[in-house]
Image (cartoon, rainbow, N blue to C red; front, side):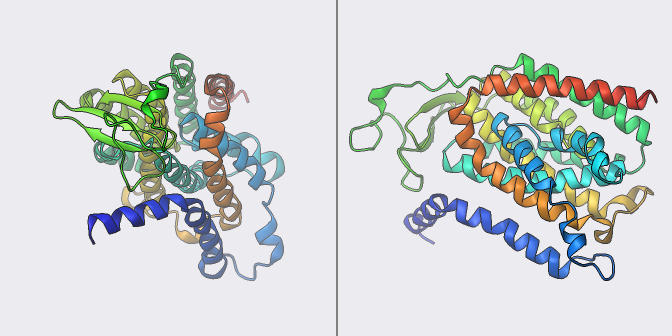
Length: 359
């Protein structure tokens, strides 16, 4: 395929990405309904039992994708504390599995939306994912064998750390140069900025010989940074990846910190982090579904997956992922970040009380 043809296909996909992305949960639900191993003689009551999860996960997915953190950071505590009020409590491994499956779809949706905006550094994302893979797998396998008390304590510790890191992080959107003269009157970009034909709007990316990256988003905002700091990011993502596999989140929270500390612009860091967390969530989901027998723990087969839950959580997270970039542009991200930070702190306290046998 010629570069011109590839550019045309890429641009067409990005232009109509919402159509392709929203088809994914439809196909998923249809596939689950007709092919998933479910209890015998299930009827309408089985499939509609957890319809109320849709609005809850839609709101949660919109919040976490706007801030750029892992969806399970909200989904897992929701399933621990709120879900049992309306239904039977779930085991830790099932909770993490539902959170990861839902998160994987939601973050994949949001990742494509951020790519459409030109805010994803794919080279940076793939290098981080490659380093995080063994830690994600190790964390996911560990989740099969640790006691529930330790699971709650580690979950509380992870949320407390995430709360601290969120308060510490500046997610304001002031990193774009905002140079109004950079965008030409005809909608193109001034000669000193990249403009790729395969992207939407005046968007593009260029890497100079000295490693400086110049990125332009679809609305003409430009960002300049380098990809230096791989070792520092690897250290953060190794810890975050372990918690990502164990509890369903961690890579996103530590990932934002590591990219900002190596001078990656905020909006590029948030967009790139979506790719990292989506890929690690997909990997962790696969290990949670098939990997229990590898470590002598209980095996979570496809038949044990609560399909009547995920048929509502997956579409909700996909839609939330598509909404997130628009919310990110419209709202003060720091306000939303601080709200999530307080919520994490409260949830972590409740988890510590549960681990201590008080709650």
